[in-house]
Image (cartoon, one colour):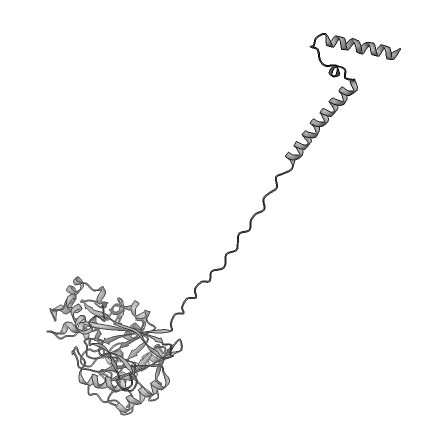
Length: 429
C-alpha cells in the first residue's frame, strides 16, 4: 500500500513538471532522487577539490632561484717600490767676515750681540742639509779681548750661538785671521765651543795635538773632513802650541792626513783657505794644491778666502781616472768692507755649495748631484740692517736700497746675475 501511494505521488509530480516544459527525452526526465543527490554531491566534491588545490597552490611559495657565485678575482700584486738610495746632502757657505759695520748692526743696547738677522733668509736652506759647514773667518775671542774689525778681527761669542741657531754643524776655523788675537784668542774660541756646543765640530783649530780626524757617518757612509789655511797673516803660532792652526805649508802632514782619511773613510773632503783676494779665477797656487789633492785621492774640495766667487769644475787624474769636484771659492757670506771703488760689488755675491753623495752599486760613495745657490749680502743702516738673501729672492728694489751702492755704484740686481753667469755659467741656474 505504501509502495502504491509513493508511485502515485511520483507520477503526479512528473506530470505537473512536464506541463510547463518542452518535451525532452525520457531518460532525462525519469531520474531517480538518488541519482540527483549523487550528482550534486559529486559536483560539490569537485568544486571543493578544485578550491583546495588552488588554495594549496597559493599557499606554496615559488622556489627562490639559487644565487650564482661570482668568481673571486685574482689578487693584483702591487709593484714593490724602489728603495730610496742611501744619500748624504752637504752644504757649505763662505766667509763670515765681520767688519765693524756688521758688528754695529748686531749690537744691542745692553751691550750684547745678535746675528740672527744675517741668517734669517737662508736658515731654511741651511737646516735642510744633512751636514752644513761654514767658514768662520774671524776668531771668537769674546768681548774680554775687545771686539774689533779689520785688520785684526775679534768677534763675540754670540756669533757662535747664532751659527748654531742657523743650522750649521761644522765650523771651519783655519783662516788667515785665526791668530789675530794670539794664543788667547784661539783658546777662548775653543773653550767656548767645547763648553757650550760639544756636539758642533770645529775644524782647523786645536788645543790638543792628538785631535781625531772628523768623520761624519750616515747610512753606513763615512765622510772625512780636513781644513787648512795658507797662513796666518805673518803671525806665528804659539811656541807651546805649534799645532794650533792647520796649515797648508806643512805639506807632508797634509798628505799624511789625506792618506789616513782615505784609509778609514769612504769619501774625503778638504776645505782649503787659499787663493788670491778679489780674483775671480783660480791662481797658480790653487791649481798646484788641487793637483796634489787629486793625486792623493781627495773627492771634494770647497775653497774660501778670495772674498769673491770663483769657478766650479771637475778635475780628473789621467793616470788613475779618479775625479774630484772643486769649488775654488765661495766668496763672502757676509761682509761690509770700508773700501770703495770698482769691484767692491763683487764682494757682495757669495755661493752656497750643495752636494749630494750616494753609495754606488759597487759600494763606493760618489757625488750624484751638485750645484751652487747664489747669495747676496744686503746692507742697510741700523740694528739688524745686515742680512743675506738667495739671489733668486732678491729684487731690483732691494738692490737699489743696498747701501753698498754708496761704495760701488755699479752694484745692482742685474750686476749680480751677470757676475754669476760669468763665473759659474749655467751651474747656478
